[in-house]
Length: 166
Image (tube, rainbow, N blue to C red):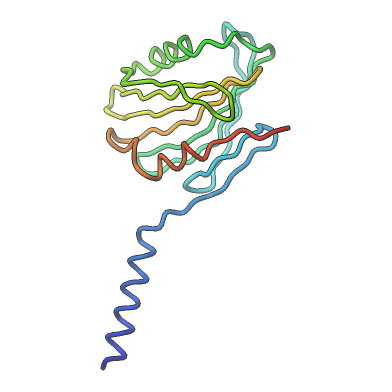
């Protein structure tokens, strides 16, 4: 009888440990020259486009979960655009019809960047870090229900983003 209780308690404890454990997927894109820890294995989307800065290619690695989105996009321009994070933020707000909640300067291995929090019209919040390096603009993005942008898994995703050396 004691053995059954002990086994039952061990099963419950083991189940409880597994329930709170997040799955992490270490990912690196050698062509994109970045690495990040996603909550699951990402899928890739690649699109060509054109903007005021000229032709470009968007490569996005993303993980969609119920009500939540994690992605890293790097946009490669034919010619390096002038670095202007304020203009990037204004373009983001116009494209999403979002409201800027806050932004701050961030640094990654000596590269200046921005972290932006935006409330979208459907009460989704988007947290984004962007870094321009030469002719590439990198964007690490989380989108989910308002109030989830500071969860531990979102912080871990954002803080895991790094650029790889050639």
